[in-house]
Length: 142
Image (cartoon, rainbow, N blue to C red; front, side):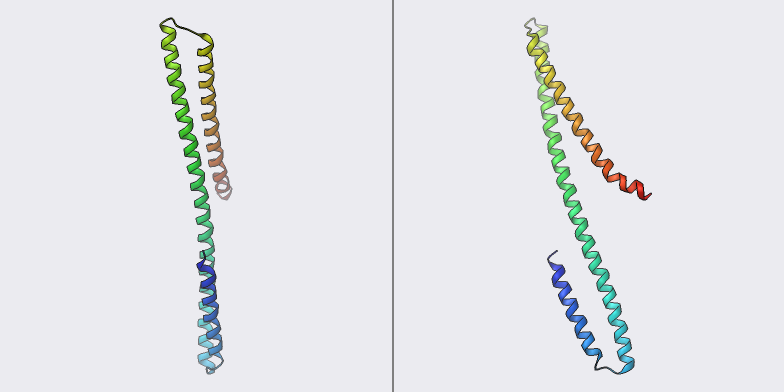
């Protein structure tokens, strides 16, 4: 985006040179050159608008990618936690089947598993909210 000020300066200088040259031209050539200068100026304005829009889109894409990376990391952590808790619960159930039961340990493991599932659900709800917030403006336009 640091190119924009340089491009603006170069374009402004070129337009100034064109305007300065117009004063030395005869009437017909001057009108034609003025029309060309106006065409160039409108094209420059359009290009500047495109550059600004491109910059805004790049920033939005970057923010979305950052959000996606964060969500993916959170999801990976949640899945890892859930897998570990499910393994612990399986071991506890196996121990209970063999007669070595401690109901408090089994209960604590199940509570932890439930909490992990609730965290995964909360993450899913945040994902859904993010998707809906992106779709809402599109739905209003349609």
